[in-house]
Image (tube, rainbow, N blue to C red; front, side, top):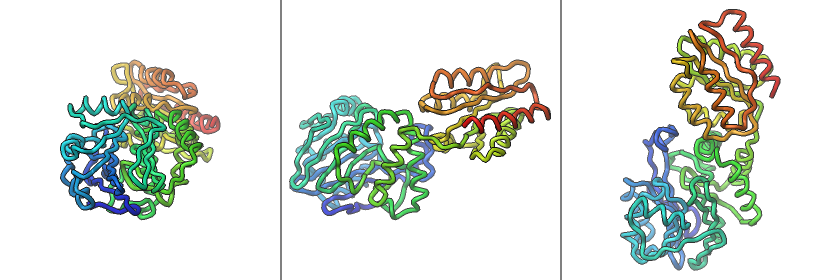
Length: 395
């Protein structure tokens, strides 16, 4: 994919990874591919903002070369050092010997640890720092732990563009560049999925940072993230969604997540769902062994209720739900209500284990759990229905 003009003197020069399906190891399934966005500002000085992943250097340099000879880049800004944004760092350092590089002090330390190289001219910056490129002044905004300690945003008042790196991104490969060029419902769903799987644990930090940025009264006509499409028409809408997600504003809906061995736990899950449905509350049911954790996280992002079930094996929960519970613990969900259920043969253990993880994670108020030995009979299934009813009413 070639370079795109996004405003006069401003270009998108990143690359599209159409076939990437696993991101952050196996944590995030990217069924719509990935982009590694980078931006070029052509002024009295030429500014390159963010880089691309290792393996995409040639296409990246071809895109840059369609605008300017890479060796003539004057300024390189590194908003975040994670390898999907910095893989081309050694190449750019070598090709741009006269460029001055900018990033946080944490970025400097991390880049050297990753790549063992450092440009001759590096300046560590923080909130309040700014550089001049001619008509443009670039302001830097620290956003540590959004989602790494080195992270920052860059802002060009001249262009009215916020270069937000991992903020406001989506894993959405496309030959389009702007939010109003694709299906908005799909775009918002991918943005939600991205937030849930990348930024969910950092909601309180993000809320504070969003508030601080809004107080700066920046004119933002575009938000240019390092993954996905650029926001130009729906900037207020994505800011509003981020404020809601960061504030953990929940809807009256419930996720039922379970793993089953001989379908006893599944039968319980379906009866609990029936009970919830009888109260007119939205709910979805997910067999964790057959559903994508990435999608479940997105559903959980604004779900008020979480119900988790497992059969017991060797006195413990089943392995796939166990992995999910470790993932859930890291999300740091707040203000939810929860319920644990499950079946067992000769001895229990799964229900108590799941309850312990949820209690230790905090943020979820647990209702009394339910357990069934072997297969649930009619009376026990009726109880599952009533438990679902009561849980729905408690929301």
